[in-house]
Image (cartoon, rainbow, N blue to C red; front, side, top):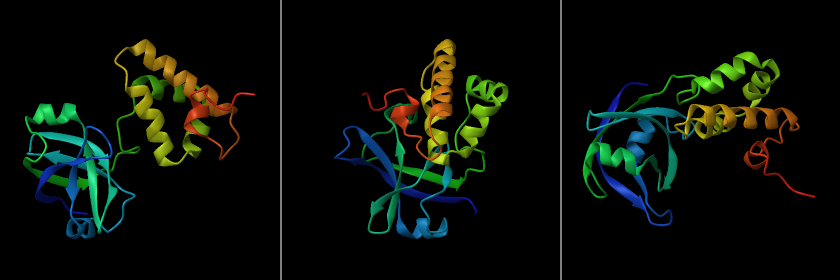
Length: 170
């Protein structure tokens, strides 16, 4: 896939309060291969690059979420037209692995094996959940919680709730 650049206004999904997005028109989606199951490096206004995935918007169009923090960093808002550059994200997980989780998976062979058996989306969920906090000890605690719970779950039954220890109660 080559690098694709186009202009689009910042949109807002009314049914998800505060959710902003960058539209990927159908013709751009076709240039990307016409599939939604790919991770991309998205650069906005040649200033800010982040990893993201395509979601269906309807009528052959897709979107990439952009959060309020990124909008603020760019100095843009809903309705502003921005330059978007897309290229395939060739990183292993489609997002940066926090060092605390990487270290745990290096030390825990069974945990690593179970993590590797998860779908890419579930792997990213774990990575995101661990990365979402600034405190290193809390990242360690979250990584241990998720991987320990994951090791207890039957293969193919790895729900997010159960990985968090919030599964069905008797």
